[in-house]
Amino acid sequence: MSMPSVISLIDDDPSVRTATNNLLAAYGYLVHTFASAEEFLRAPQLSETSRVITDVQMSAMSGIDLLTHMRSLGHRMPFIFITAFPDDAVRSQAIKAGGSCFLAKPFATAALIKCLTIALSG
Image (cartoon, rainbow, N blue to C red; front, side, top):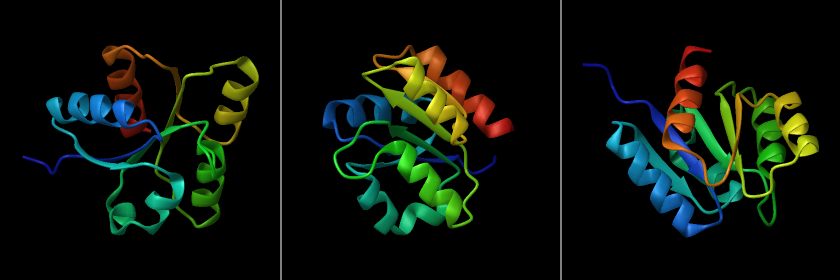
């Protein structure tokens, strides 16, 4: 059996982190959760991460800024954006920055799993 994919989940809302972590764990993913982009960037798990799920709007560094920063450091893992405030401008910015998927909260389990599958095959 192969090692589970390591997903880093970054969201400043604890309830979103808990619910999404439980959902992904039920599908066999290994999940590390972080309350901010800065916390993720300091984490030793950064190097193990195969995919990132991040909120777009966070207090200090946005999810899109995090993606841009990670690409500048040479990291190529897929990014899936989640947001409670979906609009076409933000969606377009997230995809243009290199995001694999863009989901509005609350998202359906099937939609998230589909995004992860696409991100894994990409």
